[in-house]
Amino acid sequence: MSFNLPKWFDRSVRQQQLDDHVDRSQTATFGFRQMPAKEKKDWVRRHFDRVAPNYDFMNTLLSLGIHYLWKRIAVARLDLKPGDRVLDVCGGTGDLSILARQKVGRKGQVVVYDINRAMLDAGRDKTTNGQIRNQLHYVQGDAEFISFPDNRFDAVMVSFGIRNVTHLKQAFAEMHRVLKPGGKLLCLEFSKPVNPLFRWLYDFYSFTVMPFLGEILVGDRQGYVCLPETIRLFSLPEELSHILEEIGYERIAYRRLTNGIAVAHTGVRPVE
Image (cartoon, rainbow, N blue to C red; front, side):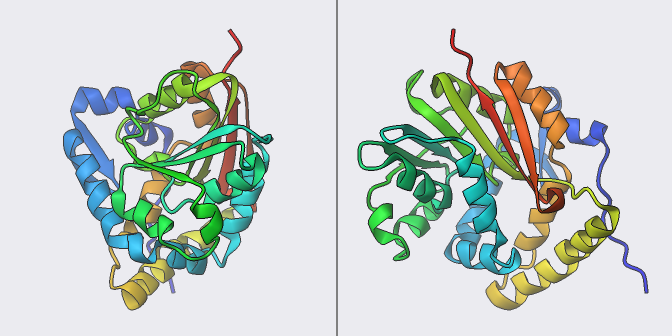
């Protein structure tokens, strides 16, 4: 028995997802679907409007709960201190924000920032960690035009959301702008598994099991086909490190998690 699974794209295709190509061609992708660049935000909004009610449940089911471990490891890399101000870009239902809030304490501030109102509402209304959720600040806004002044935050986080942004470099530049000099960026994102056999098993799971469960449990097969498609078009760790360096971050590092299914990237805004 053989399965014709979509291939992992080469670097030239991954580069077509970046700002320069998007601006030249005026086209963007969401998964493998191509569209006018100006329409992508609406596609992303509609997608997350649809998945928001079941987002956390499906994440936990499809990752077998391991996404919570990835997030704890990633947030630990920020070395947050009591009193720090933290911005969680594309923060969704606030998993990273809850972990950050536990680190910064009552004297600190954590802002969940997301373009999608349904995702913010889904996180704010959850009863799990309800006391901590009530201490978070929720702001609806665009990652490409962050609605905070320069030098505002000690740390900025983005997890499993940056690949859905139309202009990735612009979003990272905005995060750089709102960081204080010496402030730290964390980007937790999916990537390409290192081991070939493990990668094949992951591909099979991603393009057969995940869409099947999405259709059976929440009636949304396409939403769970789109997820692995976006991952295959996203920059690999070395490529993303170069992008962050170009923008102006320093002390850039990354750690692969679970054979590279997820990668935690960090960088620092230089002290000028």
